[in-house]
Image (cartoon, rainbow, N blue to C red; front, top):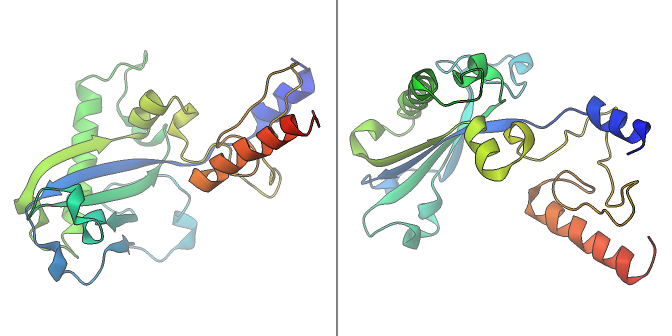
Length: 208
């Protein structure tokens, strides 16, 4: 692999990951006047850096998918998702052990942050904690584990002013091509599909 190619990749930063709390509830969410809302307890824009610094004072968003798709849950039940931007190395690496093992410290950190978000969510969804039937929690380490994305990155490489364009589909290695959120044009489902479409056309038109 050419040295310059690897050096360019090593300079790049990754996008933020997330801390996610998935709740199954017996709460009548149809009485709420929103299906998606952002909870932001502070006004300092400098604090919006993608890191989860303080679980008791962080911004996050709430989504209620069953407001539009009620068949996602049993009749009379709903799904509520709490999601906060976070990086893999936040909160002392989420209490992970040096070898990456998820021990008691990790589990305690995960539950503490989840409970904090639930308490904050009760500012807009009163008595939420009293109606939880199912709770699943994911940290950036969880996302990295199940998606194999470095650091649990939500959209691959970050697009900064210095590195605005993501790497293309063609690599210096003969017949090694790349698609997905780490390549041009961007992350998200449309971006990932687009990267595959671009490569397919390059191959079809013999432009590689």
